[in-house]
Length: 113
Image (cartoon, rainbow, N blue to C red; front, top):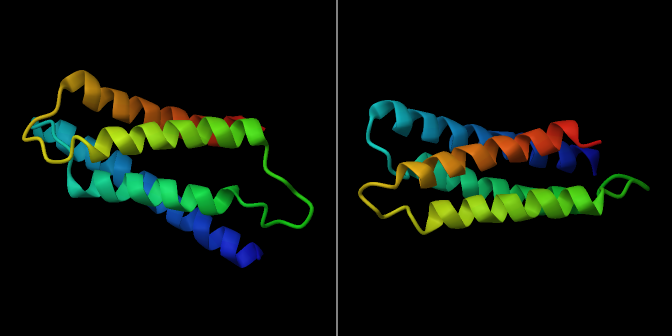
């Protein structure tokens, strides 16, 4: 079971890299829109996050408050990306909110013990 958890964690980090890297690429290009990397990253983050939420470790249940916080933020990011993906240009505030929430979600994962 530990191997499965590590594989899911690895995929979760790849999703984070896709989401943040895709956003950074779009922002630096000067054309603010949702690209395929961002959509795939948000999708991978949500799906692997659900898998990581299961208590796979022996006798160790994840903190429900942390899971709820990360789940809500992850779903909000996914919804913001999914429903804006076909627009030719995205509002700057909307785009920066996606980036900010992605970074906040990573901070919750690292600092909430």
